Image (cartoon, rainbow, N blue to C red):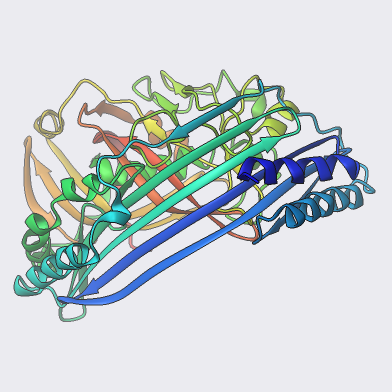
Amino acid sequence: MTHFDVATAAVRAALDAGARYADARVMHRRYESMTARNGEIEGLSQDEDAGIGVRALVGSSWGFYAVPDISERAAHAAGSHAAKIAAASARVAGPDTGLFPVPAVSGSWASPYVIDPLAVPLSDKGDLLVGATRTMVEHGADLAEGLYQIWDTRKWFVSSEGHQIDQHIRECGAGISATVIGDGETQRRSYPSYRGQYGTRGWELVDSLDLSAHAARIAEEARALLTAPPCPAGETTLILGSEQMALQIHESVGHAIELDRILGWEAAYAGTSWLDLAQLGSLRYGSELMNVTIDPTIPGALGSFGFDDEGTPAAKRDAVRAGRWVGVLAGRDSAAVAGLDYAGSVRADGWARLPMVRMTNVGLEPGPHTLDEMISATDDGVMMDFNRSWSIDDKRLNFQFGCEIGWEIKNGRRGRMLRNPTYTGIGPLFWRSMDMLSSEIVAWGTPNCGKGQPGQIGHTGHPAAPARFQAVRVGVTG
């Protein structure tokens, strides 16, 4: 019996038990990670699991059931249980739940790769992290850490509408960080970002990062930050590097345009959204330079796939065009309720979790300038990059971010290093103040996006380039 046969058995059982729609995902995932500290391997984790998750729709209510057993018998029981849960929930009357129509697809998709990350010898991976962390210690780090992570996921999806899709998604990434401790002051620098860089690629992504070549620099920068002047407080011109821009997009755009938050379906974990569907197509979200896309088709980005976990083919759409809000992240049910004509942004972090609206690759299209041109055009301001902390309210509106490092900008030149740089703002006002945007785009990967109860960890991508903003409050400490 194939995995498709198992999923089909679950769907048939759900229909036999009274569901008007059902789908099932058989998943097999292998995970590997390694950590190193101060020149020594600290930990190695290698996990593997498989199971089936079944959704059933009865009336206006969903039921979900999952088991770590991919036998036909277990699949049949899971489908039946999912339908019974949906039927029990349907005793409480609710609005009719339709599904945005998606053509039934039979197909396969696999993320491209050059080097299978799980095939790389552990000794080579260990040597990489040991060498990089040892170098950071030699250059002044009190705590030098390194990490890589690998996910290898196979999915077989079947729906009662005729979908039959299998996908093989390989994801990996790595990063290093150096922490130094001074007199009442602790500073940290990381490379390529505080969480590393990740993508739907093979080990060639990790090779391209060249962690060893950057180890000494970040350790020395962390130590220099101990005695750098603090970021001044006040309102000024702010230039953000692409790594910080990725989190700015993630928190103040990506989560805000999730349709389940906008509809109020998702509220308990990090709140809802300030956006009102009545303003879709007319709301001024940012300056005319602001063009944000939802694009799971970007080769190698962490939020890429062939089909989402409802069987909707990956497709690029606009979220913000010339500063105007025009699109959302949606699933088949939320799109139908909202009267929208697209879905495609529903995923689960494993076979045991109910799929929900998640970011794919939500990115800011590049502009016409370079970072050097933006600095040259700035008489007085601050540049910041590499996130260290973030806070945003439960409507995704008011925010405060802290960065690992900042620089003073005077008369068109980048000057002194600044420690503990922070900035704050209100989403639409902040984005409307963007007046320069770089062409130097990087597709950053976020492997730890939390959402839902029980909590799920999402993998998202954020193409981002350095950008300049006017009249931003910086140096906020409380």
